[in-house]
Length: 152
Image 1 (cartoon, rainbow, N blue to C red):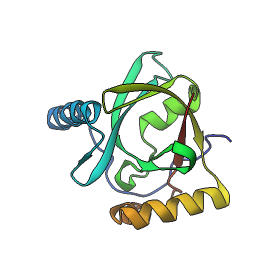
Image 2 (tube, rainbow, N blue to C red):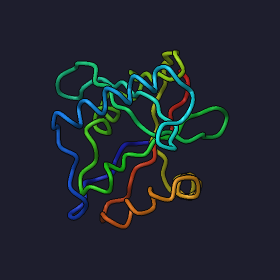
Image 3 (cartoon, one colour):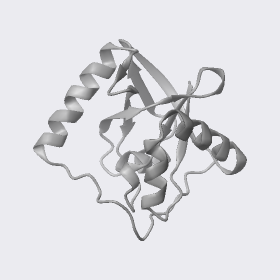
Image 4 (cartoon, helix red, strand yellow):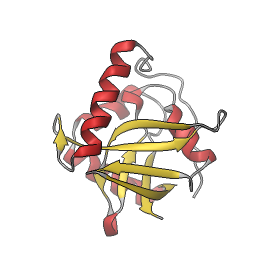
């Protein structure tokens, strides 16, 4: 399936690259790399993609949700911003050059965007387990992408 979600015309403010956000992301990534547990009530993993333009590795801490058959689901919500997060475009450019880190393990994965009924079922399960994700959808007019990560 393709990565084809367009940016919206309205939404929450896009998270900016300020020093506090960078520090917070570093701390969350360190915790996710060491633990299979939760942080702030969310399961975390570190997603490493290859930059669409730069070709350099880019890492982001993300909440994840269990998918079918041992897969991981991540959501390109950007907190309900009008634009998709940068890592979404990196995945679209290189869906087969992705790793995740959690619990001290680095796992090569392949990324696939869910569409139609499959996305709707996954989204309902995500919102059921983390209600705050439902509010992101209300803030923007874009469909928030749900990505399945499968062990390569």
